[in-house]
Length: 538
Length: 66
Image (cartoon, rainbow over all chains, first blue to last red; front, side, top):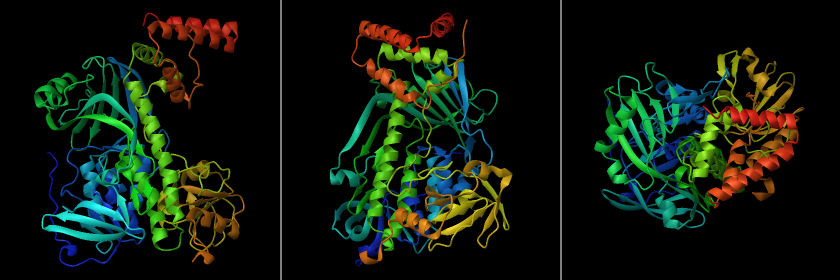
């Protein structure tokens, strides 16, 4: 069954009849990034209004690969388990050259993590789950469909917006505007901000097909298959992925200069798919021909206007760094903006979103550009090196590492950046949490469930944690008067060591480590990571 | 004879590959061939161990008919 798009009803906003009180945050765009942003802020007690020009979830599956780190973030937001249950879990990727398998890789070979390396789930399901989750916060999230932002003006201490609806225009004010309005961001366009980087000439056909049999041969494998120069599509590349509901994603590189309009027709696409799946019956659900760009804004923060997700940075799809990068933006920004709005943190904290996520976006762009270059050799020499790399990759491990069909999204390190207190540990400051199973008095848990959401100090092994205001405490393999857990199968101790304390930020990144955590050192690290407002600043 | 070598290039493999492609940027075929030849000679001098070099030559040659 194809996905059933139910339009969300338009509800006349109060601003049409009387001026609305100033909102804390206006979020433009109700895609996965805008919705996740609203939920993250709501979990920190911050109210937002979400404005979207449309009234249905994503048309077409679009973003389908959700990484482990994204699932861990969405666990905190309350939809991770639901996504895991519905999604197709995969961790094996196979690379082919011609008809022959060159090598395969396992993305998460170790046990003891709540979430797998990746799941595949259509973007429309993710948006549906996020909208349902947003409805859990009726006092904090004001979702407005068919509310198109047509203008905005930064007035120093707030942003003034004009919004068009089917029943007329109205004005709205918010202390901050977060632009989650996608790759073509009207907010960005309106501000005339340069979006710079590399445009690729290659065109790709993307198609979702629904079929009862598996296109992966006899066994129904939840894997990622990538072909360089496949027999069914000579000289180009192809990608095959499995989604829930017997839907399969096919990506095909097209000829340079192919006519996009002509390619995106059933007459052209059906034979291409038949060449892959053979005589097995299938139905074409969705298709699109696209070119891509690897680009980013120089700055994500412009006064009271903040960019997150595709509005701030776009990458090629190979590597699953678009949607996943955007969710990490949300994770980074949510607690910071909430703390600044609450008056406990200096507004300089928002500037560190620029420092940390601009770095993340640059890393994503670098990886995705390199993958794209490997997949689309531009000269005979580039084609020659690639062919010989693939030949060596049959048995030479170093050459297998060189084969680049997408370097799949991993959280970037924030080591050395302003909020982190330098230090040495197995999981150094700046790293995203490494999950591990725990068992406590109230049953089994996961490290990610215990540390995310607030500043949390975790002590591993025999060391006592001091009490510090605004810092939650968790003990692992110790007994104390704060919640303590046992490291199930010793995974947590193997991953973090013993006799160490780690201070996690609300977004689950390590910001300081201690051999002997005393209250003043922990408080100093916390104040540094939170840009805590000093008494004399107030 | 073919030797399977342990991977010593990662985690910098992508940066190396990119730099190699950049080194060829703008060269025609003959110039690229010449660059590759110079590169092999420079790398041989850097490796300097004749037994290792013979082994590399044999290994590279062993893929010829595949």
